Image (cartoon, rainbow, N blue to C red):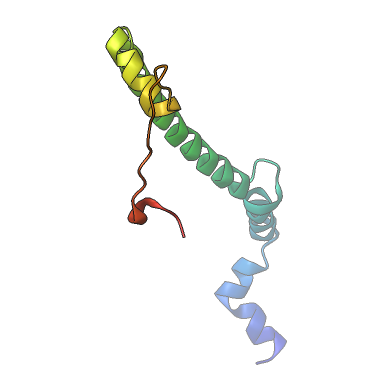
Length: 106
């Protein structure tokens, strides 16, 4: 192909148009290099999703803790909680902790 045939092709006329060239350059700049680029927005959206998942998790944990606090208003429940969580005991009482082989880490 010589230069005249190349210039007569419609795709070459479109690609060599200065407005198309500037428009493509602008689109590439906005998608990848700008401070508000598509890449940075994608990263921010991923962070937002992660934060919303964390929020849901912590709201669920708050509800669970509220239920535990409601149960701890009873003195029997307070003693049960102290024995299970902190291994507390009454005076002159011995406590044996039994660990099963399948619950131990290797």
